[in-house]
Image (cartoon, rainbow, N blue to C red; front, side, top):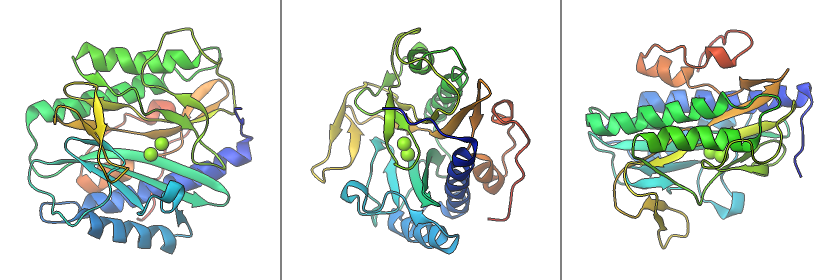
Amino acid sequence: MIIYKRKDEIERIRQSALLVSKTLGMIARELKPGVTGLYLDKLAEEYIRDHGGIPGFKGLYDFPNTLCISPNAQVVHGIPSDKPFEEGDIVSIDCGVYMNGFYGDHAYTFEVGEVDEEVKKLLRVTKEALYKGIDQMRKGKRLGDISHAIQTHAESHGYGVVKELVGHGLGRKMHEDPQVPNYGKPGRGKKLKDGLVLAIEPMINMGTERINQLADGWTILTADGKPSAHFEHDVALINGKPEILSTFYYIYDALGMESDEEDMFRNQPLVLENY
Ligand code: MG
Ligand code: MG
């Protein structure tokens, strides 16, 4: 059953989402060759608790850490390790926060130092697919329109769309209805209406869409060992239009990057706070 949110509930989800955004901004400053996932995980947990939140993933379904850290061929759900990141790695970092009764949950795939052009393209196209999906989250559209937009963009570049893992509704629970697959048919599925809050999260592989799971019971990786990217935003349907509740702008600020990619999905300009 889909739980539609009131405006005040959406504002609380926004606060949780923005604490994730700031955490990822802080992480962006720290992630470099030689640093380990376990170190980043410790920083993230301290940061979230210092800012009044609770790590949303830690203990959820018995996940052991604050961050899911999935380098290179790992798709999602990677467990932070003591293996240092290396120049040329890509690292998908997914983070959740629980605060004031609501969850925030979003993810970004980072580049460590200089990354191959081919891999950069995978990241760019996956992020584009995310925004193409978000752009479909409008009154009168259907869930399948979001899914289809993501799939067609990724597949037009020859990439594999992971089917087994999906986006989701977000609210008092981390994972609510509906499921938001990254593949589907246009005009199918539930009709979208105001108050819907979704975590939209394409997981796109450079090669085959097939995946395996490690014996740790968590880590998902590509079956062919090629890289995979993951970008996730939390989005609310307000006045018939999509509004992004999370932001990548803290990450861009930390990395000295310029972007206005989210502006068309926000009612008023976002003012960055200290982080
Ligand atoms: Mg996530
Ligand atoms: Mg999610």
